[in-house]
Image (tube, rainbow, N blue to C red; front, side, top):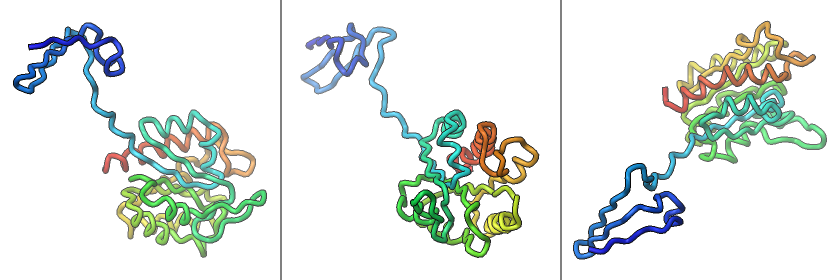
Length: 222
């Protein structure tokens, strides 16, 4: 029987320098004798579940309020794709010479890379006649998304109220669709800029608090 002492640098330092590995070569069996408290090579960490947020300029608040994004994304692989002028299905409007991809185009281009949970916060640039929730849900289902968290709009116009009606009605057809009722949750809160839509720092924090339990329920399959 031959005893070999691993150097301090072996296994990237995961074993203590004094650890001894006894190799019984005749039997082809390795028996590791480690002193008390010595570390052992750990298994590869489980990857964080992927969550993708698709939004317009309202959800883009997570890009400049880091604390809200950290809270929402804690323990998750959170990917945010939120841009000014985005629409759901109809061609997006143009802002500073750029026309962003629609929510539907993002879903189709990302496919399986979206992850099991997707948050949709789009609709402030849309009108009710083209706000096609079902079309986006079909694309999300085809991409393998398990849970969709759809954020309602602040009902500052009748058009936004109609979009919210479309979101709520869609839950009757899509069992994997969860509604994050931002309109009700934010009612009466001083979370908005002068237009009553775009978020202050406190508003971004409020949106993250609304979304997190719904996102975690989707991740956990409940």
